[in-house]
Length: 160
Image (cartoon, rainbow, N blue to C red; front, side):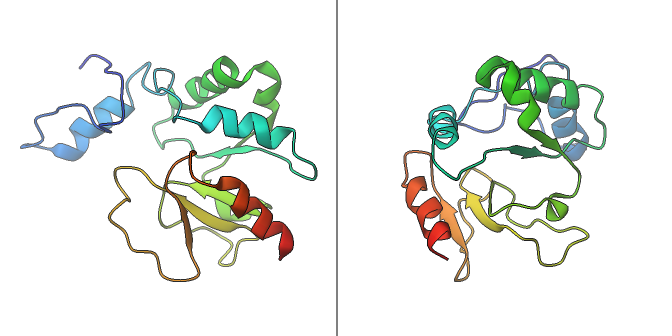
């Protein structure tokens, strides 16, 4: 299967009638998948703005696929391409995000589990196609897009 650029429609058209898991994996495990992803609208600008905010440190915490042949290198190259070579030093690559010390974690995965049952960070669910239908119980929070008021989330965390 040739690489297809993933856009806001989330998933390229695939015949999923037989062995859907393997067919989907063949897309995200293929060379060029991660490097070809477009930035989420507003994300790069938000990161750049956060970098200039007082008392704010920004890191990209990302998990590799279990079949990581292309994933890891492409994630590093993607960050270098879109945020510059100096930002590569701000990548935290881990299968277990619960052990990372932070105040906030913006992530599109609705459940993040690992060795630490009570991570130091508050998980802000970033809305995308696979989680927009989820209703979050209070006090969990969601960021629907980078056009939303992400600064208010940072400020509310500072006040805690």
